[in-house]
Amino acid sequence: MLRIKITVVERTFNQEITEEYGSESFLAGRGNGPCARFADGQVFILERMSKPEGFCDWAWADIHREIRTVAFGGGFPWVNTPRAAITCCTDGMKPVVFKIEMTEDT
Image (tube, rainbow, N blue to C red):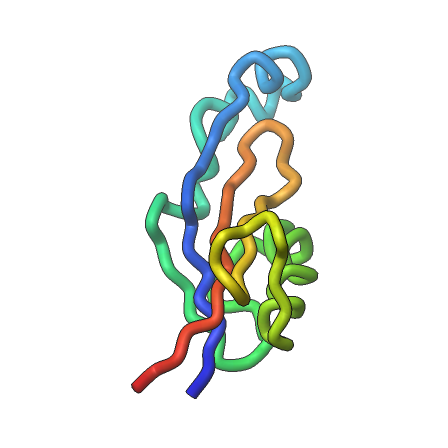
């Protein structure tokens, strides 16, 4: 059975940008450090095109285009693995990088 695998490659943190543009409430709350919603190396397996439980709504909206491309057999010429994508959410302060790939269970 073919499935889509989403792997959290890396959570990043733009401290200088966050300090300059983050609101006071953001900085006082969860403004220091990378996104706490995900963990580096975390894996999500899609059996349908539905957002996995616990997946960030904003990140899902950002990477859904690449998920559809891979799911329908496409790929990206700048990625060295066929039927795969490297993409990220658009959070400018705490972007998360994802690998999306087609897998096959045996």
